[in-house]
Length: 133
Image (tube, rainbow, N blue to C red; front, side, top):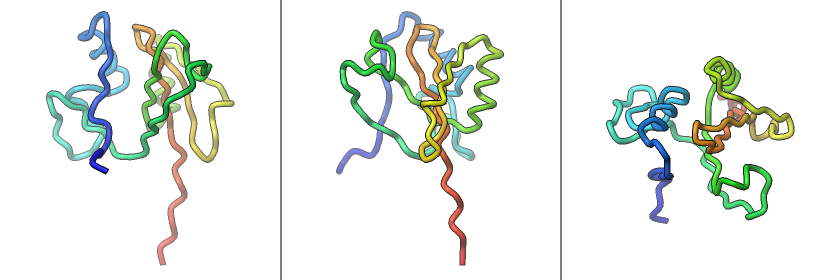
């Protein structure tokens, strides 16, 4: 297959500069952000750490995320508890639901950006270390 991964996520915004700054400030996402140690920031791209990425169309009548938005952004995170506390202190509503969590998959919370776009934050379950012989 010639596809190597997702090269970008593009969506409309009423105030792209302000929304970009919100994502950079609260989530470390966007141009110039780096989540990989030893990588130099790029003025146009976010250098993300490799890992699982789910690409899944949902049924049109799903209630997994709000019906008024055609998508929900899912961001893979570490230290979900610490991030949740920081977001709450910044006045960002964090929604939790134990039914979303699965020990085999990980833990989830939801937030919305200032324009109401849904964001799911996912801390994957880390598989146990394989013993070395």
